[in-house]
Length: 257
Ligand code: ACO
Image (cartoon, rainbow, N blue to C red):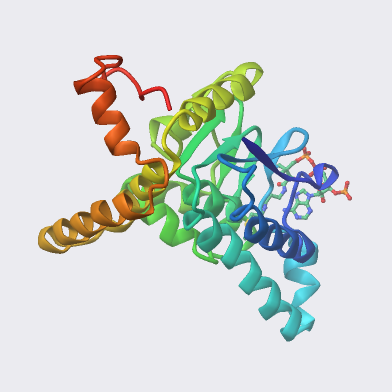
């Protein structure tokens, strides 16, 4: 498993243009890195990420339209497209402050686990803007309407337990056990056939918003495509392990690859 860090701890890991360019490069590279089988996104120090760097991303960029456009494009590319389309499983491990623009990569990850003690906030309204980038779209998709409106409009912070209750994350654990728990889940994913995992995440992500017939046909094509790309011939092995060798019960876990 590979840990990818927000790494500006002295600035609570706020996202500067430079951070966006580096994350964009890193994710492009990690997508094709054979050693990276599960990606865990987290923050160095006591923060996950304090949102956009209000000085370097906003104030400084306002006078430079070219840099503004460049950094906006990179910010959107890595936080949404490169993470949501990452060909391997992704886990957001939210270890502390998570504000504004940091919601997007959390929502883009396949799985999110946070510390009970983490502090989340849609703080945009507190300094006079809207949840921009695509944060409003993220919360409209993932949260129920009442929660999305309440936290976007009041700007009130909430803790990790509340984030779990609202299903912004899968669940929360005490900070002291966060890394161990995230690693445990990553290890479960590492046991699986990576081709089946990739197609599973693409299937679940893409059927959202499809009509029944479209989804049915899309999934049938995906299943067929998986048989072609799966170099491990996982389905044959999995069936044989249960039906012929009677070595494992798929209901309780994956077969021994
Ligand atoms: N942008 C720029 N600098 C930041 C940011 C940020 N988003 N967050 C923290 N920093 C800097 C501080 O300016 C300070 O720098 P300095 O040491 O050079 O003065 C340093 O990080 C430490 O910050 P403190 O405020 O001293 O840390 P504290 O632990 O007391 O508070 C907190 C942390 C709550 C995160 C606070 O810094 C804060 O409210 N930050 C802004 C959060 C925010 O609203 N982000 C924008 C969301 S909207 C969007 O992303 C579009």
